[in-house]
Length: 632
Image 1 (cartoon, rainbow, N blue to C red):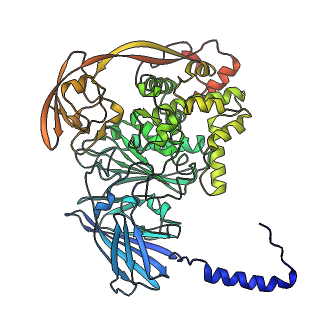
Image 2: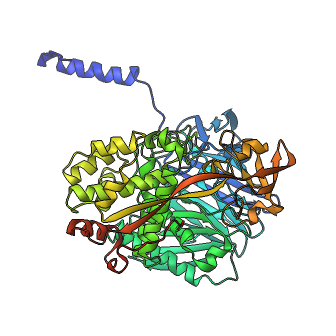
Image 3: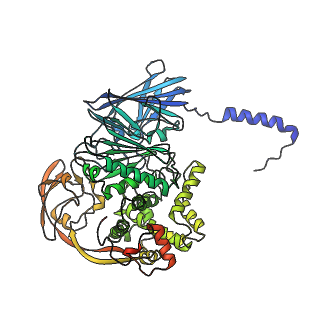
């Protein structure tokens, strides 16, 4: 639009415009200038915290507080709002203010005027809630994961499930003070104050994304690359932790070297570990400057590679997801599902780097790396969902798949394989000049410079720019198509030969990707139509309690143990609050096992690419079977 304006009339027009802006434009309430929280351990016997959220410098008569509907990193809407009770509000002088509850997440406070407004509430800590806890849930204590936890000796406060934010005020500086019983310690990766009880952050997203362990736990500290790195272990006192903590520090050092180029993006880092008496599997959740990981007590003692790979995965998240992220994942919209196309990269490629970090840290051999890759290739290639669901769809519909994928396709598993193929393809077309290491560093540099996440499509554009080649066809095929992955030809570019063999394995007729740990056992998700489980009378949603009389939480390895075709196994399940007995006759199914071997007569470029992936000391086992047909 063009306005033709004689100079003689300019002052009058400016005055008129100012009047219009003052009187015709809507007014916007300024946010508070600071939010200070206090979390008090109020009642350990009844598992209650008392929380206050003090909004300082309120300028309006009405202010709203809300609790997030989900926790970043876990794409599931939770029931955390149910744990808030006895909500009250006052002004800065203690005068009671009116609190209304317009929806399940929001508390509206009216009558404050100018000054401070304090929202106070009881926070019910819970041991177990499948809707709020999810992966990592156990039959006993888990010391907290997604939900607040509290007992006589320990507490856990996850920000999104515990601290309400000021609607329209998430960007202002925040602080939180923890008041704990005598003799309790506090561990949080937010910026600590002199009293080690008050922690600060630049905004709500940052504050909430660093949880706190409270209580009597073991803590070990070391400085790595100029940054304090701590290991906090809850539930394993009286045991030797030296081997385990040393492994954690080696992972941190290798991660900072490989992903960060020797520099860390965080001012400090905390590994929050919980080792309950019993647990189903290993689970972790990444945070801004920390991670929370639940694992068996045996993992603390042995520092086994399966546990260490989860630790490495979560540490890589300090870059990939927490700093390298789509612009939709920060600042966060906590009120609804936030969908992105790149979970294959954020989770799958992070998992691709996990064994690489262990290898760089000297904690595993190259045989382990190849076995890990081959095993994951097998998971993808033996999964029929790869023929009906694209990797991009699995990312977009993570909310329907409870943060694992969609319709049986895991963006962790296929994302790892695509990450491997992408690394090799980038190195092939660039003559090994660049790979995913360079892609990761470039994405980090650009998002760090912008101070915000990357726009949609940036991963693909950056990969093409770095290689000097158009990689659109590669991404179309691997992300947006259900055609078979170009495994053999791309792997050969790295001097790796993919070998496969047919196997007969027990068939239970259950989609293992849809199994979910609960307080009692394992919730069964999808069943294979007319498979052994369905024929036995099992139904989707049943809770598996025991197998052959053995509590499911005590079974190590596969859920059903070591069984064979045509064997009958006795299952105890819970359905509609009723315990039932079911006999399942094990079937048989054909699968293909995969193995990665080194090509002995590789070309110089193949050898160079292979060295970039897994290191130099590889010639001794060239051409020999490595980790054949085994899970890492």
